[in-house]
Length: 70
Image: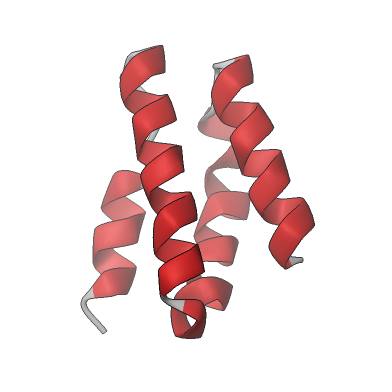
């Protein structure tokens, strides 16, 4: 599956600006919506990356994803 390594790369939030991190998590939210067969893998990656998120805006979207797809 090509999507999994790509998502792991996207979900590295350290060193990214707030805007870049926000755009990343919004993109990930769209990928989850369009590709339901990959939700479990992406969901797990988000949960593993959660401690790296520093922006409250990104945390808000990540929590929404967790709440929506848990």
